Amino acid sequence: MTPALAAVERALLRPGARDVTGLGAAVPGQLARLAGELAAAGQARSRVGLVTGVHIAWAPTPAAETDGPVGVAVLAAALATLGAEPVVLTDDPCAGVTGACLAVLGAGRLEVVPVAADEAAVAGTVADLGPSHLVAVERLGPNTEGRVMTMRAVDVTASTAPLHAAFALPGLVTGAVGDGGNEIGMGNVPADVVAACVAHGARIACRVPVDALVVAGTSNWGCCGLIAALALLVPQHGPALRALLDPAVDAAVLDAATAAGGIDGVTGRPGASVDGVRVADHADLLAGLRALARA
Image 1: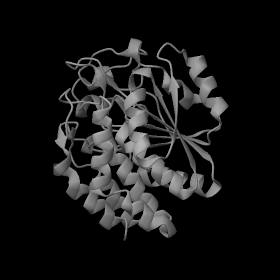
Image 2: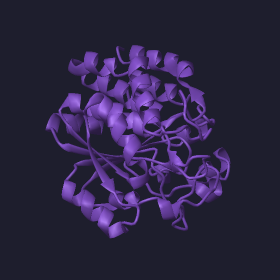
Image 3: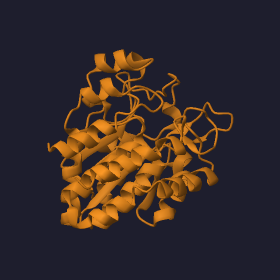
């Protein structure tokens, strides 16, 4: 991994709702690996599946959270810039917010899987799409008992389509972005590390592994880190990719998510924040990533 890519990986460990340095320390170099795979997907003009969406059932008005769909929309635009074909998968409760985010930048076809779908149906749907790569962004997955848990240790298995089943399909390059220990891909982090680093970690830890996991303070930031890494790996597309790291782009996509009913996954309320972090308070992170993407 180059020093510039290592610097991007370190920048993403800035705390969001929680300190993620322990989780990130368990998967060094995996951002560079996933970015390299996505760059190859662009060169091959292949289809890339992006899986996202968390329904915040405990909120005063239950709704999809904004962490995940916002980052996926920007990452989909980056993949399209590289020549890949992004297809975004989510389930019914998160479809409206995810679709609104994608519409802002006009990249990424949306596929909605019913919550009631079983694992075989999910695997069949994704297999029929024929992606070469499948990347989860802030998508919850099952613990060792097969239950899907929120950060508050609330069981949401019944309202979460088993999109994790697609990550066991043969022949796929898989990746993930997460910030809490309960997302698809956190199977790459030893269970005892999740237990030590995260409240309720022993109970909520997702055990679904991927080929490469990106840990970030929020999952939206993880997507931005991947875009910065892609700008380094595919410099001919650097200007267009760096333009996606503009705070104005981030704010526009978040505004669309909020207008569609999306809420902050920590506060449970709508507004200009993600995981309790105000948009204005992470503009400097995006500026830093843009600078690193020119290294």
